[in-house]
Length: 273
Ligand code: BMP
Image (cartoon, rainbow, N blue to C red; front, top):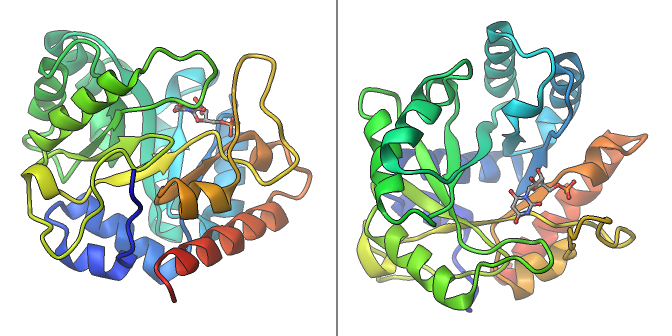
């Protein structure tokens, strides 16, 4: 679909959701639209890389259930890094069960995701009850937000156009909690002067995984990559999610700087600055 030609500043000023506002404000102040997907399995390695790349990212994406030595102290340290470097935390949990089960998965268990994570995500396969369930967990917490998986990067995935449209409808009915999509394209109308707090003109943030600078051609399990410039200028994404191309790089800081400048220049081109 279309891309969004408003600046992140304009979108921050108008956005009704506090988590979306914070994210846009961080992006503007640090001049970055990069999200590090820190898919490592040792908590020490995750913390060390996050401390190194913290200055270059607006968002840190975790898969907390792959950590082999998880302990609650890890969460305190990660939260300290998020304050030190000014980024938000996104747990890529991809909830996919009925409302009453996701309530326990999001709020409880050993990870207590809702307590420390600003943003999480879900599939809408079970129908809108999953969003209602997740939202109910956040009632007495600081602001929390949800992304809906509307498209996936992997070859042969089953998220059809029809499914994507339904995902967008569910998001539009829950703009007090859903701030955007994990998607490969801008799947909803871009915001404009008619942007409203909710409903059909809500300003959804598009975050795209399966992004790599030229040179990485997918993996042997169906991952597919788009380059940052295409993702931002053609497909209309707002946040670039990058994993292995950063955390397996021998010089992740230099690589992160390349993503930051490529991503930011592509964004400036898109908004015509
Ligand atoms: P990488 O850049 O190393 O391919 O990692 C991509 C990250 O984004 C992984 O953590 C994966 O779980 C996630 N992801 C994805 O690759 N495609 C999707 O459609 C949705 C995802 O969350």
